Amino acid sequence: MASSLPPLYALRAFESAARTGSFTLAAEELHLTPSAVSKHIKTLEQHFGCRLFQRNGPRIEVTPQGKIFAAELQQGFGRIERACELFRSHRDLLRLKAPSTLTLRWLLDCLSRFRQTAQAFEVQAASVWMDIDSVDFFSEPYDCAILLGNGHFGANTAAAKLFDEWLIPICAPALLADGQRDLAACPLIHPSPDRRDWRRWLQKSGIAAPIDLTRGQVFDSLEQGNTAAIAGHGVSIGDLALSLRTIEEGLLALPCDAAVRTGDGYYLVWPEESAKRPLIERLQAFLTAQTPDVSQAAVRFIG
Image 1 (cartoon, rainbow, N blue to C red):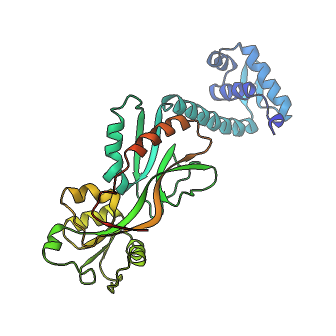
Image 2 (cartoon, one colour):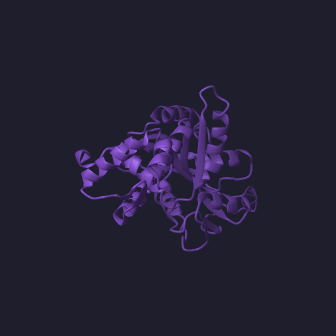
Image 3 (cartoon, rainbow, N blue to C red):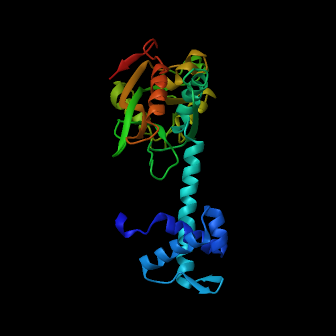
């Protein structure tokens, strides 16, 4: 494949000459002589077996075929230049994709502490709503991501677990003060439209109460479920690790002490062949040391 391509310097000379309309201006732009530009373009014409310029004495005019070719080359060189500039400016930057709830409840504080360390570099977090956590490093502008899942996030990716997901019912303390500990009678809050979090908790918790999952208010993120629960609108199902601080602050309470391990966890994920792997591994080591400690919570761990 490589042998079928013309020399890069010849392509560059032609693109510049076609854009400026002059071998002399192209030579100035590329720090060459006009005769060298002319020679490079002849090399290109011989390679393709067609004329790219009409030469009328000192005047040149791009042929119709040449105009099409020049437009494509201009886009191609533009992309190469932008890629090089991005690489130069972002060499010590990690662009991190993360779920919105995890970002607000844990990650932002971690990154704030990370900036105070000696090994700090810039980490740009993008808080993204995802129904099912995923990332495509080829098409999305991220160097790494924190995703909820089972540790398998597609081919050519590496992953390191940060902490497990433990689901547990949460509500405002006032709701418990009113004596509403019977989940079957409480207004429900669903943090996902498919109600999967309540369903997974019920399957493993051993709670015998007949809870009708078709009732209740429906949201599309754990964060919205937490906010609605804090406001006293009912009992939501939350992630223990991400709700721990709010519970300790007295904004949330536990109507049931059963914390269910789902089998999923939060993972730092990155491309296997990433040039930024040393930075990613430094961030991974720091985040691992910052994982919420749920072991001291007054709950029964199931699973």
